[in-house]
Length: 396
Image 1 (tube, helix red, strand yellow):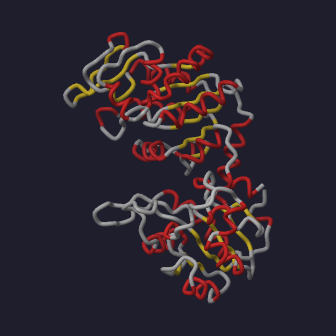
Image 2 (cartoon, rainbow, N blue to C red; image 1 turned 30 degrees about the vertical axis):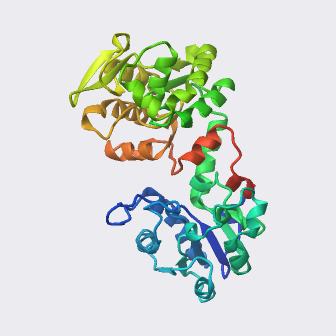
Protein backbone atom coordinates (compact mmCIF):
# COMPACT_ATOMS: atom_id res chain seq x y z
CA UNK A 1 0.00 0.00 0.00
CA UNK A 2 1.39 3.39 -1.02
CA UNK A 3 1.11 6.37 1.32
CA UNK A 4 1.67 10.11 0.86
CA UNK A 5 5.41 9.56 1.31
CA UNK A 6 5.57 7.34 -1.76
CA UNK A 7 4.45 9.82 -4.41
CA UNK A 8 5.80 13.08 -5.77
CA UNK A 9 2.77 15.39 -5.68
CA UNK A 10 4.34 18.70 -6.70
CA UNK A 11 2.55 20.10 -9.73
CA UNK A 12 0.20 17.10 -9.95
CA UNK A 13 -3.59 17.15 -9.76
CA UNK A 14 -4.52 14.98 -6.81
CA UNK A 15 -8.09 13.81 -6.40
CA UNK A 16 -8.70 13.00 -2.73
CA UNK A 17 -11.83 11.14 -1.62
CA UNK A 18 -12.68 12.02 1.96
CA UNK A 19 -15.73 11.49 4.18
CA UNK A 20 -17.21 14.84 5.20
CA UNK A 21 -20.60 13.31 6.06
CA UNK A 22 -21.77 15.32 9.08
CA UNK A 23 -24.88 15.63 11.27
CA UNK A 24 -27.37 18.07 9.72
CA UNK A 25 -30.17 19.90 11.52
CA UNK A 26 -33.36 18.72 9.84
CA UNK A 27 -35.12 22.09 10.14
CA UNK A 28 -32.35 24.59 9.44
CA UNK A 29 -30.17 22.33 7.25
CA UNK A 30 -27.19 23.63 9.19
CA UNK A 31 -24.17 21.32 9.14
CA UNK A 32 -22.56 20.49 12.47
CA UNK A 33 -18.75 20.12 12.53
CA UNK A 34 -17.47 16.59 13.08
CA UNK A 35 -14.28 14.71 13.92
CA UNK A 36 -14.22 13.50 10.32
CA UNK A 37 -13.63 16.99 8.93
CA UNK A 38 -10.81 17.58 11.41
CA UNK A 39 -9.23 14.23 10.51
CA UNK A 40 -9.40 14.57 6.73
CA UNK A 41 -8.24 18.20 6.91
CA UNK A 42 -4.77 16.89 7.78
CA UNK A 43 -4.58 14.92 4.54
CA UNK A 44 -5.92 17.80 2.45
CA UNK A 45 -3.49 20.27 4.05
CA UNK A 46 -0.56 17.85 3.56
CA UNK A 47 -1.34 17.52 -0.16
CA UNK A 48 -1.53 21.30 -0.48
CA UNK A 49 1.80 21.67 1.34
CA UNK A 50 3.34 19.16 -1.10
CA UNK A 51 2.38 21.41 -4.02
CA UNK A 52 -0.52 19.38 -5.39
CA UNK A 53 -3.57 20.83 -7.05
CA UNK A 54 -6.05 19.34 -4.59
CA UNK A 55 -9.50 18.28 -5.79
CA UNK A 56 -11.67 17.04 -2.92
CA UNK A 57 -14.50 14.54 -3.50
CA UNK A 58 -17.03 13.86 -0.75
CA UNK A 59 -20.65 12.99 -0.03
CA UNK A 60 -23.35 14.14 2.39
CA UNK A 61 -26.37 11.99 3.18
CA UNK A 62 -28.21 9.66 0.82
CA UNK A 63 -30.25 10.80 -2.18
CA UNK A 64 -33.83 11.43 -1.10
CA UNK A 65 -32.95 12.02 2.57
CA UNK A 66 -33.19 15.43 4.25
CA UNK A 67 -29.44 15.55 4.87
CA UNK A 68 -28.44 15.03 1.23
CA UNK A 69 -27.50 18.69 0.74
CA UNK A 70 -24.90 20.83 -0.98
CA UNK A 71 -21.33 20.80 0.32
CA UNK A 72 -21.05 24.60 0.34
CA UNK A 73 -21.05 24.68 4.16
CA UNK A 74 -18.50 21.87 4.26
CA UNK A 75 -16.08 23.96 2.22
CA UNK A 76 -16.09 26.63 4.93
CA UNK A 77 -15.64 24.04 7.68
CA UNK A 78 -12.83 22.33 5.77
CA UNK A 79 -11.17 25.70 5.24
CA UNK A 80 -11.29 26.40 8.98
CA UNK A 81 -9.83 22.97 9.74
CA UNK A 82 -7.02 23.18 7.18
CA UNK A 83 -6.36 26.86 7.88
CA UNK A 84 -6.24 27.26 4.10
CA UNK A 85 -8.69 28.72 1.56
CA UNK A 86 -10.98 26.03 0.15
CA UNK A 87 -12.73 26.86 -3.11
CA UNK A 88 -16.13 25.35 -3.85
CA UNK A 89 -17.92 24.66 -7.11
CA UNK A 90 -21.60 23.70 -7.20
CA UNK A 91 -20.97 21.04 -9.82
CA UNK A 92 -19.63 17.48 -9.57
CA UNK A 93 -18.26 16.67 -12.99
CA UNK A 94 -19.79 19.02 -15.55
CA UNK A 95 -18.11 21.81 -17.47
CA UNK A 96 -18.15 24.15 -14.47
CA UNK A 97 -16.33 21.58 -12.31
CA UNK A 98 -13.81 20.77 -15.04
CA UNK A 99 -13.05 24.45 -15.62
CA UNK A 100 -12.52 24.96 -11.88
CA UNK A 101 -10.13 21.99 -11.75
CA UNK A 102 -8.13 23.22 -14.76
CA UNK A 103 -7.78 26.69 -13.20
CA UNK A 104 -6.21 25.38 -9.98
CA UNK A 105 -2.67 26.41 -9.13
CA UNK A 106 -0.24 24.22 -7.15
CA UNK A 107 -1.22 24.20 -3.47
CA UNK A 108 -4.81 25.33 -4.09
CA UNK A 109 -7.77 23.31 -2.81
CA UNK A 110 -11.13 22.79 -4.52
CA UNK A 111 -14.14 20.96 -3.08
CA UNK A 112 -16.55 19.58 -5.68
CA UNK A 113 -20.30 19.33 -5.11
CA UNK A 114 -21.88 16.35 -3.31
CA UNK A 115 -21.06 13.21 -5.35
CA UNK A 116 -24.37 11.68 -4.19
CA UNK A 117 -26.15 14.19 -6.44
CA UNK A 118 -25.12 11.92 -9.33
CA UNK A 119 -27.60 9.18 -10.23
CA UNK A 120 -24.90 6.61 -10.97
CA UNK A 121 -22.63 7.26 -7.96
CA UNK A 122 -24.19 4.25 -6.22
CA UNK A 123 -25.34 2.35 -9.33
CA UNK A 124 -22.52 -0.06 -10.07
CA UNK A 125 -21.65 -3.10 -7.95
CA UNK A 126 -18.06 -4.00 -8.83
CA UNK A 127 -14.80 -2.05 -8.94
CA UNK A 128 -14.46 -2.56 -12.69
CA UNK A 129 -18.06 -1.55 -13.48
CA UNK A 130 -17.49 1.83 -11.84
CA UNK A 131 -15.26 2.85 -14.75
CA UNK A 132 -18.54 3.49 -16.59
CA UNK A 133 -19.71 6.04 -14.02
CA UNK A 134 -20.17 9.65 -15.13
CA UNK A 135 -17.72 11.09 -12.61
CA UNK A 136 -14.95 8.71 -13.75
CA UNK A 137 -15.63 9.21 -17.46
CA UNK A 138 -15.65 13.00 -17.14
CA UNK A 139 -12.90 13.63 -14.58
CA UNK A 140 -10.39 10.83 -15.05
CA UNK A 141 -8.43 12.73 -17.76
CA UNK A 142 -7.85 15.55 -15.24
CA UNK A 143 -6.60 13.28 -12.44
CA UNK A 144 -2.91 12.42 -11.99
CA UNK A 145 -3.18 10.54 -8.69
CA UNK A 146 -6.07 9.30 -6.57
CA UNK A 147 -5.76 9.60 -2.79
CA UNK A 148 -8.28 7.48 -0.87
CA UNK A 149 -8.68 8.76 2.67
CA UNK A 150 -12.24 7.64 3.43
CA UNK A 151 -11.85 4.34 5.25
CA UNK A 152 -15.35 4.93 6.63
CA UNK A 153 -16.75 4.60 3.09
CA UNK A 154 -14.28 1.96 1.84
CA UNK A 155 -16.82 -0.84 2.23
CA UNK A 156 -18.83 0.61 -0.67
CA UNK A 157 -17.85 -0.15 -4.28
CA UNK A 158 -19.06 3.25 -5.47
CA UNK A 159 -17.73 5.40 -8.27
CA UNK A 160 -16.01 8.09 -6.22
CA UNK A 161 -14.42 5.42 -3.99
CA UNK A 162 -13.11 2.84 -6.47
CA UNK A 163 -13.75 4.24 -9.96
CA UNK A 164 -10.31 5.84 -10.34
CA UNK A 165 -8.52 2.55 -9.59
CA UNK A 166 -6.44 2.65 -12.79
CA UNK A 167 -4.70 5.84 -11.62
CA UNK A 168 -1.87 5.67 -9.08
CA UNK A 169 -3.76 5.06 -5.83
CA UNK A 170 -2.38 6.31 -2.51
CA UNK A 171 -3.67 6.06 1.05
CA UNK A 172 -4.34 9.34 2.82
CA UNK A 173 -3.38 9.96 6.45
CA UNK A 174 -6.75 8.88 7.89
CA UNK A 175 -6.83 5.70 5.81
CA UNK A 176 -3.24 4.91 6.77
CA UNK A 177 -3.90 5.45 10.48
CA UNK A 178 -7.07 3.31 10.42
CA UNK A 179 -5.38 0.39 8.68
CA UNK A 180 -2.26 0.55 10.86
CA UNK A 181 -4.41 0.51 14.01
CA UNK A 182 -6.49 -2.40 12.75
CA UNK A 183 -3.33 -4.27 11.76
CA UNK A 184 -2.38 -4.34 15.44
CA UNK A 185 -5.60 -6.23 16.12
CA UNK A 186 -4.60 -9.04 13.75
CA UNK A 187 -2.02 -10.33 16.20
CA UNK A 188 -3.23 -8.76 19.44
CA UNK A 189 -1.45 -8.83 22.76
CA UNK A 190 -3.38 -10.98 25.22
CA UNK A 191 -5.61 -10.90 27.10
CA UNK A 192 -8.03 -9.43 24.58
CA UNK A 193 -11.34 -7.87 25.65
CA UNK A 194 -13.99 -6.68 23.23
CA UNK A 195 -16.93 -4.54 24.42
CA UNK A 196 -19.98 -5.17 22.25
CA UNK A 197 -22.70 -2.58 22.89
CA UNK A 198 -24.86 -0.09 21.06
CA UNK A 199 -28.27 -0.47 19.46
CA UNK A 200 -27.29 -2.60 16.43
CA UNK A 201 -26.66 -6.23 17.43
CA UNK A 202 -26.11 -7.10 13.76
CA UNK A 203 -22.92 -5.00 13.85
CA UNK A 204 -21.42 -7.11 16.63
CA UNK A 205 -22.58 -10.66 15.92
CA UNK A 206 -20.32 -10.99 12.86
CA UNK A 207 -17.23 -9.76 14.71
CA UNK A 208 -17.96 -11.98 17.71
CA UNK A 209 -18.44 -15.06 15.55
CA UNK A 210 -15.30 -14.40 13.49
CA UNK A 211 -12.97 -13.53 16.36
CA UNK A 212 -14.24 -16.11 18.86
CA UNK A 213 -13.92 -18.90 16.29
CA UNK A 214 -10.30 -17.86 15.67
CA UNK A 215 -9.60 -17.83 19.40
CA UNK A 216 -8.55 -14.16 19.38
CA UNK A 217 -10.98 -12.89 22.03
CA UNK A 218 -10.48 -13.84 25.66
CA UNK A 219 -13.45 -11.83 26.95
CA UNK A 220 -16.50 -10.72 24.95
CA UNK A 221 -18.36 -8.21 27.13
CA UNK A 222 -21.96 -7.81 25.99
CA UNK A 223 -24.10 -4.79 26.81
CA UNK A 224 -26.58 -2.49 25.10
CA UNK A 225 -29.11 -4.31 22.90
CA UNK A 226 -26.63 -7.12 22.30
CA UNK A 227 -26.38 -7.75 26.04
CA UNK A 228 -30.17 -7.96 26.19
CA UNK A 229 -30.19 -10.33 23.22
CA UNK A 230 -27.73 -12.61 25.02
CA UNK A 231 -29.86 -12.49 28.15
CA UNK A 232 -32.70 -13.90 26.03
CA UNK A 233 -30.30 -16.46 24.52
CA UNK A 234 -29.37 -17.57 28.03
CA UNK A 235 -33.01 -18.19 28.89
CA UNK A 236 -34.01 -14.92 30.58
CA UNK A 237 -37.35 -13.29 29.93
CA UNK A 238 -37.03 -9.52 29.65
CA UNK A 239 -40.56 -8.17 29.79
CA UNK A 240 -41.12 -4.78 28.15
CA UNK A 241 -37.62 -4.67 26.59
CA UNK A 242 -38.46 -7.61 24.33
CA UNK A 243 -40.65 -5.25 22.30
CA UNK A 244 -37.63 -3.03 21.62
CA UNK A 245 -35.63 -6.05 20.46
CA UNK A 246 -38.46 -6.96 18.10
CA UNK A 247 -38.65 -3.40 16.80
CA UNK A 248 -34.90 -3.32 16.13
CA UNK A 249 -35.08 -6.82 14.59
CA UNK A 250 -32.49 -7.95 17.10
CA UNK A 251 -34.31 -11.25 17.63
CA UNK A 252 -33.38 -12.20 14.05
CA UNK A 253 -29.94 -12.91 15.51
CA UNK A 254 -31.15 -15.00 18.44
CA UNK A 255 -30.16 -18.35 16.85
CA UNK A 256 -26.62 -17.03 16.30
CA UNK A 257 -26.44 -15.74 19.87
CA UNK A 258 -27.53 -19.13 21.21
CA UNK A 259 -24.97 -20.91 19.06
CA UNK A 260 -22.18 -18.59 20.22
CA UNK A 261 -23.15 -19.17 23.84
CA UNK A 262 -23.13 -22.93 23.39
CA UNK A 263 -19.66 -22.86 21.82
CA UNK A 264 -17.95 -20.04 23.76
CA UNK A 265 -19.89 -19.65 27.01
CA UNK A 266 -16.76 -19.25 29.14
CA UNK A 267 -15.59 -16.28 27.08
CA UNK A 268 -18.90 -14.43 26.67
CA UNK A 269 -19.94 -12.23 29.59
CA UNK A 270 -23.58 -11.21 29.87
CA UNK A 271 -25.08 -8.69 32.31
CA UNK A 272 -25.72 -9.80 35.90
CA UNK A 273 -27.79 -6.73 36.74
CA UNK A 274 -29.46 -3.98 34.73
CA UNK A 275 -30.80 -0.47 35.18
CA UNK A 276 -34.44 0.03 34.24
CA UNK A 277 -36.38 3.22 33.54
CA UNK A 278 -38.67 3.39 36.56
CA UNK A 279 -40.90 6.38 35.87
CA UNK A 280 -37.97 8.37 34.47
CA UNK A 281 -35.55 7.37 37.21
CA UNK A 282 -32.78 4.78 37.31
CA UNK A 283 -33.55 1.62 39.25
CA UNK A 284 -31.14 -1.31 39.31
CA UNK A 285 -32.31 -4.91 39.56
CA UNK A 286 -30.45 -8.24 39.35
CA UNK A 287 -31.19 -10.15 36.16
CA UNK A 288 -32.74 -13.03 38.09
CA UNK A 289 -35.59 -10.61 38.94
CA UNK A 290 -36.47 -10.19 35.27
CA UNK A 291 -38.91 -9.91 33.49
CA UNK A 292 -39.76 -6.27 34.15
CA UNK A 293 -42.55 -4.02 32.93
CA UNK A 294 -39.97 -1.25 32.60
CA UNK A 295 -37.44 -0.71 29.82
CA UNK A 296 -33.81 -1.78 30.35
CA UNK A 297 -31.61 1.27 29.67
CA UNK A 298 -28.16 0.39 31.04
CA UNK A 299 -26.07 -2.29 32.71
CA UNK A 300 -26.12 -2.28 36.50
CA UNK A 301 -23.31 -1.35 38.91
CA UNK A 302 -22.32 -4.98 39.59
CA UNK A 303 -21.96 -5.74 35.88
CA UNK A 304 -20.11 -2.47 35.25
CA UNK A 305 -17.63 -3.29 38.04
CA UNK A 306 -17.03 -6.81 36.74
CA UNK A 307 -16.53 -5.58 33.17
CA UNK A 308 -14.21 -2.77 34.35
CA UNK A 309 -12.06 -5.33 36.19
CA UNK A 310 -11.73 -7.38 33.00
CA UNK A 311 -10.81 -4.28 30.99
CA UNK A 312 -8.24 -3.15 33.56
CA UNK A 313 -6.33 -6.40 33.03
CA UNK A 314 -6.56 -6.44 29.24
CA UNK A 315 -3.68 -5.71 26.87
CA UNK A 316 -5.89 -5.19 23.80
CA UNK A 317 -9.37 -3.68 23.79
CA UNK A 318 -12.03 -2.95 21.17
CA UNK A 319 -15.16 -1.02 22.09
CA UNK A 320 -18.02 -0.93 19.62
CA UNK A 321 -21.03 0.91 21.03
CA UNK A 322 -22.08 2.25 24.45
CA UNK A 323 -23.41 0.13 27.33
CA UNK A 324 -26.80 1.83 27.39
CA UNK A 325 -28.70 5.06 26.77
CA UNK A 326 -25.74 7.19 27.82
CA UNK A 327 -27.32 10.37 26.40
CA UNK A 328 -29.68 10.34 29.40
CA UNK A 329 -27.82 11.25 32.63
CA UNK A 330 -29.87 8.62 34.48
CA UNK A 331 -28.36 5.88 32.34
CA UNK A 332 -24.84 7.08 31.59
CA UNK A 333 -23.10 5.24 34.45
CA UNK A 334 -22.39 1.99 32.62
CA UNK A 335 -20.84 3.57 29.53
CA UNK A 336 -18.81 6.04 31.60
CA UNK A 337 -17.49 3.26 33.84
CA UNK A 338 -16.30 1.16 30.88
CA UNK A 339 -14.66 4.11 29.12
CA UNK A 340 -12.87 5.16 32.31
CA UNK A 341 -11.60 1.60 32.77
CA UNK A 342 -10.24 1.53 29.20
CA UNK A 343 -8.65 4.96 29.69
CA UNK A 344 -6.79 3.72 32.78
CA UNK A 345 -5.95 0.24 31.49
CA UNK A 346 -2.87 1.10 29.44
CA UNK A 347 -4.12 -1.38 26.82
CA UNK A 348 -3.94 -0.78 23.09
CA UNK A 349 -7.54 0.15 22.33
CA UNK A 350 -9.57 0.71 19.19
CA UNK A 351 -12.79 2.65 19.70
CA UNK A 352 -15.41 2.47 16.96
CA UNK A 353 -18.86 3.78 16.11
CA UNK A 354 -20.39 7.24 16.17
CA UNK A 355 -22.03 6.83 19.58
CA UNK A 356 -18.78 5.59 21.10
CA UNK A 357 -17.01 8.70 19.83
CA UNK A 358 -19.82 10.91 21.20
CA UNK A 359 -19.56 9.20 24.59
CA UNK A 360 -15.79 9.71 24.65
CA UNK A 361 -16.40 13.42 24.14
CA UNK A 362 -19.22 13.59 26.69
CA UNK A 363 -17.23 11.94 29.48
CA UNK A 364 -14.02 13.80 28.56
CA UNK A 365 -11.97 10.67 28.10
CA UNK A 366 -8.31 11.43 27.41
CA UNK A 367 -7.83 10.30 23.80
CA UNK A 368 -4.08 10.24 24.28
CA UNK A 369 -4.57 7.28 26.61
CA UNK A 370 -6.58 5.41 23.98
CA UNK A 371 -4.93 3.51 21.16
CA UNK A 372 -7.02 4.69 18.23
CA UNK A 373 -10.44 6.31 17.87
CA UNK A 374 -11.82 5.18 14.53
CA UNK A 375 -13.80 7.57 12.33
CA UNK A 376 -15.50 4.61 10.66
CA UNK A 377 -18.74 2.83 11.42
CA UNK A 378 -19.98 0.10 9.10
CA UNK A 379 -16.63 -0.18 7.32
CA UNK A 380 -14.94 -0.97 10.63
CA UNK A 381 -17.57 -3.61 11.39
CA UNK A 382 -17.18 -5.29 8.01
CA UNK A 383 -13.38 -5.20 8.17
CA UNK A 384 -13.32 -6.80 11.62
CA UNK A 385 -15.89 -9.36 10.48
CA UNK A 386 -13.41 -10.56 7.88
CA UNK A 387 -14.85 -8.91 4.77
CA UNK A 388 -12.62 -7.48 2.05
CA UNK A 389 -13.39 -3.79 1.56
CA UNK A 390 -13.37 -2.57 -2.07
CA UNK A 391 -11.57 0.66 -1.10
CA UNK A 392 -8.84 -1.24 0.70
CA UNK A 393 -8.56 -3.65 -2.23
CA UNK A 394 -7.68 -0.90 -4.73
CA UNK A 395 -4.97 0.35 -2.35
CA UNK A 396 -3.40 -3.07 -2.25
